[in-house]
Image (cartoon, rainbow, N blue to C red; front, side, top):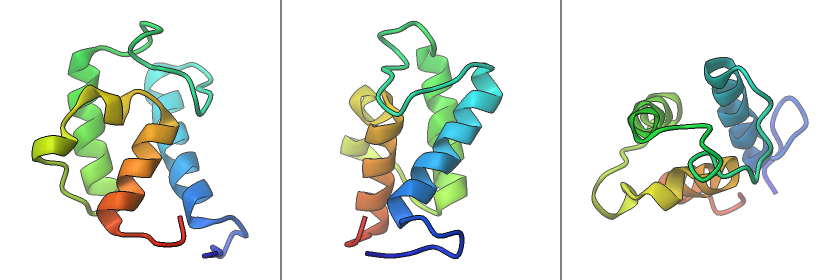
Amino acid sequence: MTISSTGGTASTQVDETIREFLETRLKIDVRPDLDLFASGTASSMFAMELVVHLEQKFGIAIVGPDLVMDNFRTIESMSAMVHRLRDDPDA
């Protein structure tokens, strides 16, 4: 397991970074499993903002088959995608 300097796992760090961004932008508390789109919390336009944020924050490229709404529905799904694209084996 990868341990960060703050004591959390790599997965926890990614989750927390995504959660902080969402809560700042949406001005609500966001649970890791909240479906942002089914709940009406986020729009498809916001999905594009998420793409740009995740790419810049985590140094990944989200292209082709990864550009599907299911990858952006929850903090959990975004975190899983980030780890997969970064090829984090311990996440």
